[in-house]
Image (cartoon, rainbow, N blue to C red; front, side, top):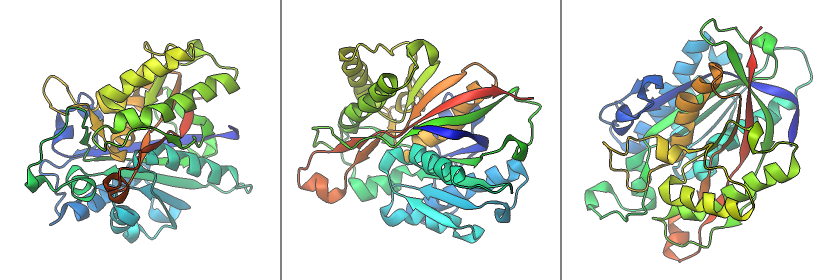
Length: 343
């Protein structure tokens, strides 16, 4: 689905916890909290504060007030999006919560783009998108509390204590040119993605469960657009990790698509494998959100990458579905990002 008019990413922010401080992309994060508590007395509240900090950095970067924002779209991994609502309610902005598992970041960008496309008047309009996850809160909800000391499977991934915030608008006239960035980034295409049965029931192997959904989205893009591999500088998946990424590459080769030279997975990129033991990689909806801000956008703003397929990958499961042995469905919404020379 190509947008009638491009939607521009005005600015972004990235926030992380203790493990994220050692990320290869830590220099592009805006804030870290060494103890992962963010000044709160529970990890669940800490994730809410993480979202507030990420959005506050976004406002400060753009010199905007909450009254300038039309809509705030946000999501996290906690039931009923309580982290997002706890952290963002004080801004008083109309709020749309999303719960798309680890696909939430791309889902939010897509919904924001569609909202901006629906506006016809000439007044400035801005939409904020915030996505977070917290390792300790996610472990308590989906698996076992950290205090339990359960041994992690080799295929397991480490939920990132991280988040990203983004400000979107439809008109370049509503953006302030940045002297530090010769390019600006726009969203020109989006696809919701299909729900695909990953045929995996093991919650510790989410990467393999999500890979078929990523394959479907990537294959659909190249089969239904005029682009080929040579037109794309990078294909960035959300958090397939090492297991899911290897499976994705194998599946796409069956479709005669070899993306190995341009594929980057946030689950592999977020942590330093030589220094940090994340087993199969990182996960959580804050993983792709933080690296969209800290890895993808910086490379596009300087012109290193001109066209990027970005698709956060989500494992659609619950504690009950896992206990009942139901296979994990995957989903991979997608946006096509393009860099454009600033005038």
